[in-house]
Length: 148
Image (tube, rainbow, N blue to C red; front, side):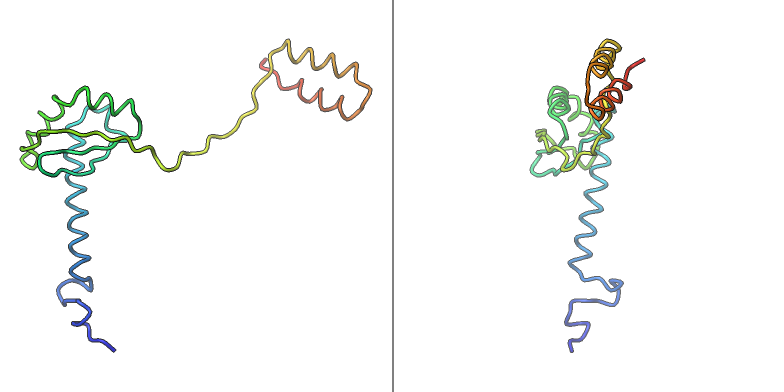
């Protein structure tokens, strides 16, 4: 059986390996950077926009839709001016916006479209001329789904 020291655990790390601590610190830094970047964006463009990275003066953002990406590109000079006010992003000179649609979309509940009164009347009339009892019941049921 291996000793704890040989597994890379240190007593002051709370049972976490140094690699895990590094990852957690990077994730926290990324979260804080994203918060700062989103504050610099216009309010209507914040939903669905994410901070990807910032390397060598290039700030990379991703959005869920192409229309928001276009608006971000159109306003890039104003956005970069606001972002440069933050000490962390003072050397940003390029803004890249990528479109990354959400992986899953919420399933919309299906609703039965309502018939116009004219179509309902025509179905009811057809049901009256039908000799098959089951078909007549189905047509009458369909005719009951009217708008008003």
